[in-house]
Length: 60
Ligand SMILES: [Zn+2]
Image (cartoon, rainbow, N blue to C red; front, side, top):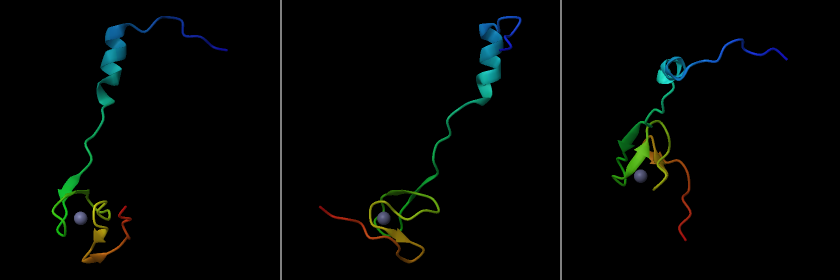
């Protein structure tokens, strides 16, 4: 198997990895229950999406 001829230094490795970063999810306020929900997805708290209840939420 081919091996790299030279070791990649920590600065070069760190410079390459400056583009690798986690992005925050787009959290918006639910118009129904006012809780946090992900944009363009049904609310995890109440199941509300686009003016109606899209998914049923189990309540224990
Ligand atoms: Zn909600």
